[in-house]
Structure formats: structure tokens, C-alpha cells
Length: 203
Ligand code: SAH
Image (cartoon, rainbow, N blue to C red; front, side):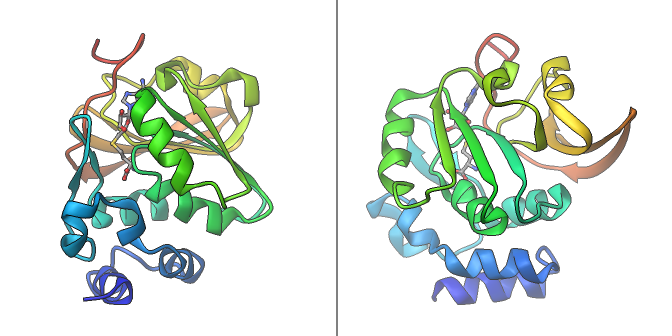
């Protein structure tokens, strides 16, 4: 099994469709983002532990979320929950001259991801509570939330540009919101994520 086999599987099951997104997935080796002890499972379409009780998301989930996000070259994206940094790296390859602001609440995972993402020059890593977004770098073209949120926080909507898109798990349901004056929402299915912590999270 190789990284290309994993991507081929994601294309076969129609989780990946957009060619720019497929190319970005090919440029990021998932093995670089999983713990050594699990590296033999890196190319299997399953979530894996990354320490601190957190997981690197299932590739199927990340593929569906990024497809729904409709990211484009030059955009500014806010990601809540850096985790392993795998999704951050893929987004970085898609937006190129744009910027990814990624926020992680766990200091150890933040440091680990810092090492992995050091060559990704368009990534800004923040340590802190992303349950209230990240106002300093707002507004964003896109917001992607990688942990289960109890609700759609008003801060996310405020920090999103008009015409922007948010992809967020609310409870077990994954939702897409498009801001065009008002919000239009689309249900994307049932998924499982680790809970959001912090001020507007579960604790
Ligand atoms: N896409 C990531 C998912 C990691 S799991 C990956 O594939 O690796 C979700 C991450 O969200 C965890 O690392 C967790 O520590 C982080 N998290 C939880 N609550 C948060 C909050 N309020 N602000 C920022 N990060 C948070």
C-alpha cells in the first residue's frame, strides 16, 4: 500500500472528485503525519490515534470536508483543530499563494504539528481556543472545523467573508453553510469527530 493507493481508493469511492484537490492529496504523504507505531496503517482509510486522546481524521472524512469547502488558490482559510496537521498540509497545497490559519488547543499536539508543518510557508499556526474562531486574522474565505461543535458559533459567521463557506460538524451531523447576505445550509451526513473543547465547546 502506498499514498497513491489511498488516493485512488478515495477517488474510486467518489469521496475525491476535484482534480486540484486530488493533486494536493497526492502531494502530502499521510505517513508523515501518523505516529510511528501506526505507520503501517497510514494508507488505510481509517482514523488513527495521534496521542492526547485525539485522532488523525479518516481520509474519507477529510476528503468529503475539503470537497464541500470548495477551497481555491489565493484564499485565506481558518482551520479549527490542527491535530496532526495532515489536513492543514493538504489545504496548504490547494491555496498556494493564500494563507491557512490553523488553531490547536492542545500544546503538545501544537508543537508536534509545528515540526511537521515547518516547510509549509503559507501556514500560520496558532495555539489557543478556536471555539470562538480567530479574530486577529479575520475575515476568512473559508472556515473548516475539525472537532465536533455543540452549535454554529456566531463568531464563525462574523469572521467569514460574504460569499464564504463554513464546513462544521454540529453534534454528529456535518453541515455546510454558505454566507450570501444570509446563511444557506446543506446537510452533508453523519460523521464522528472528537469533541470541541474551550469556551464555546463542550467544556
Ligand atoms: N484534521 C485533524 C483532526 C484532528 S482531531 C487531523 O486529521 O489530524 C481535532 C483536533 O481539534 C484535536 O487535535 C483537538 O485537540 C482540537 N481541538 C479541540 N477543541 C479545540 C478548540 N476549542 N480549539 C482548537 N482546537 C481544538
